Image 1 (cartoon, each protein chain N blue to C red):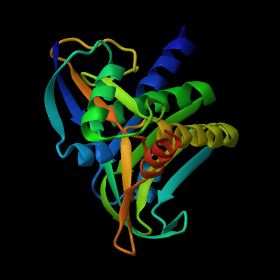
Image 2 (cartoon, chains in turn blue, purple):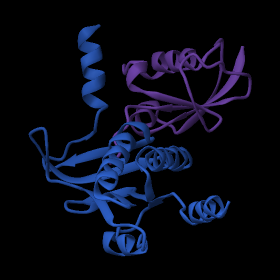
Image 3 (tube, rainbow over the protein chains, first blue to last red):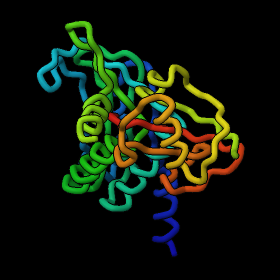
Length: 162
Length: 80
């Protein structure tokens, strides 16, 4: 009984958390906030804005999200990761708005007893959030054009096939 | 006929020229709403690449829509 109560108490401290922000993500502070004396491993992922995509020179990225569902869906992913990989805590922060080259667009942090769980949970979270969250990005190119990632070619392929 | 509020995001919003519109449609499912709006606004993305929510809950294309529902149409996502 003691063990069960202890487990429940610890679980209640472990809040899965997803946050959207229009401000710069600060991974160092986020990592420190995950400190847990029972965790032997931390695994973090930072997604950065890069200056090229599929041959186009990118000037900046514009992120848009439908926040109520982006948050609720990501909370589900974090809970799935915790259950599948026994990580002690998993958190995510995602930027919206206009981002410059080198800005951190997304941060995922996981702590677990051992490295394997931390690596696997972190990988699961970033892979799932990329395909499940209602978040979109528009690339603004050096040549003055712009385009929504995954949308422009998708529509072009469909029109070409029809 | 049902009165449906449709919300558009990202490239769908740009094509529609508005973030939201209320339409009176002869529709049974979320997929029917998507096909109606595609005809209006010229989108070509297949449903398999897009997502839909009804009244702020993720839904399927064959989920039924009722009079007064709000249908959120999500183009292909690209978070991260």
